[in-house]
Image 1 (cartoon, one colour):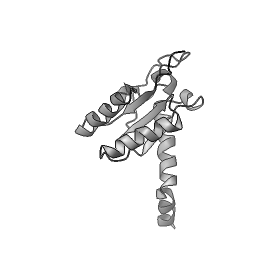
Image 2 (image 1 turned 45 degrees about the vertical axis):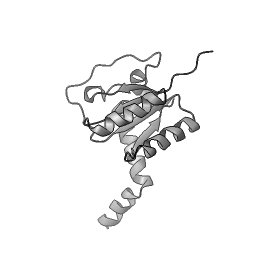
Image 3 (image 1 turned 90 degrees about the horizontal axis):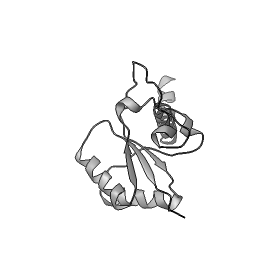
Image 4 (image 1 turned 120 degrees about the horizontal axis):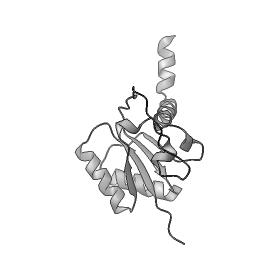
Length: 137
């Protein structure tokens, strides 16, 4: 049986030296990189990840912008994720806040919908949402 290929869907708003270091880590760990371009953010995650049964969809005229890095991990075990995060830390790279594991349900979402969901979860987890609420009172 062939090994399952781990893939990372990687979106970055800007190219920087950090991107080269990060991609080097992916290559060293045998992880396939699928770059997500700004004009692909309205595509379904399943299509971008190469899952069977997903087709490219027509993008509307107005594409939303994403101004943060996003990682979507496909075929990763918990141990694979730990090893990846350890390597990112060892390289001295800043933490990538917005990351998700590809699931059956989020594969049907557009990349932008997934971004919004993990951004909201991250804000809730980091207490930013709570701080915003307190400032409104």
